Length: 255
Image 1 (cartoon, rainbow, N blue to C red):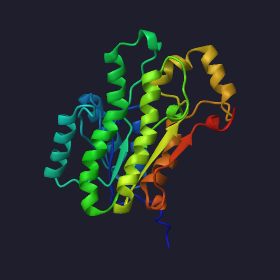
Image 2: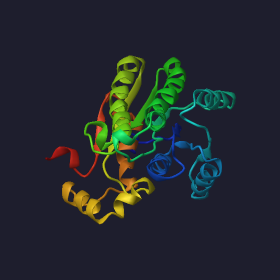
Image 3: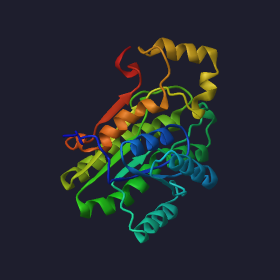
């Protein structure tokens, strides 16, 4: 008899910020586990292209471009899914941006933009998803945090504040929704090979620091987040709630 504990067959997953990078890798991994995935991004052509490429690989994927940091846009997107009888069983709040600048040089608008994209979006999309999950008494929410959900680093204050907020938002969501059959957890990626980190990868000093600092002695690959994502999206994690799993090559475990 096949083990279906990690199967996502028959489930629909919305992954925000999934037209490229970590989100796209997670979306593909969920689809390969059997889920029908909805790719999201603010860039409509790129989002639709990513969905088409996945569909050409035989995976169930469609595009739903909308701005996760804009409340009206989020509400409209969920009403659109309601109108098409699409029920989101799994939500992965992945959308995020980075801004590297010393605190004393940051404008209030720059701070707010990072907070809105990386943290407020998880609240907005999570709220709308939960409104539909709660009456069904089932659902999975996976928030994408960071190594910096628990650690600070110079020049990325708004990102660090947002990702720290993601960890506590995850716990707050779990506190409110666990009794209703919804599991809310987070993944904390370490330094991953992505477009957003390309400047750091290309910096010999920083590249060497990552390889020295991480016990794994290397950068992570986006696809290495898939195992944790499938676990948290599947029935295998039905009694796991309010946790953050760090996928960081051991960096957060050592001095």
